[in-house]
Image (cartoon, rainbow, N blue to C red; front, side, top):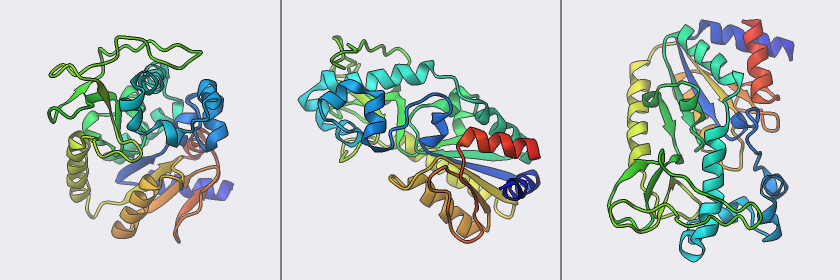
Length: 273
């Protein structure tokens, strides 16, 4: 493994552009819960275990209609958790590597806003599943997305129900919802993410011909958006892919696979650099 770490360090030190791919595993070292499997989810949310509700059950827009207090109990708790969480040192390490390369971008499936909180430029991030720090109208009264900066949700820790008043749309006063892509979600407004993806495509065009290294952290197979994107870009550009994942580090031929958690791997590579 030490040889693998040294190989990754050499590739990163020679990079002229860096793409960071990040899944849920990126936030675990900051203390964010690991939702892998029902037991991991239930350890974080015991009241939902009593109700027999999994992450896939809860991350569904149907609750906004059938039990909005429970829906906002789930998302309100996460919103405040993400606000209170301090990004781990690995975010700073990656930011330093980008500065050394001269160009960088982030592609993440996380809705926690941790890259922005760690000081990454808003215009250099794609949040492919949206952001819990932004809201939209649950009724879709207009194509508007607004920051959740002023949103404060009180949650009963025993029932996991949010207490009134629940967040509302400033235009029609109907219930508001997070601007995140849920399961079986036909009402998510993707305009903010579409604009991010357009900037990402322009960046990829601008760095064409540069020595690109892709560093993927904590992106699993269950929801493979980040893995698939990183692999496709590596295949199309000839970039070297460094995949950091304690459970699923394997990748296409040429992948530098590191079966560790994000922070441990990033610190080891940084020490080698």
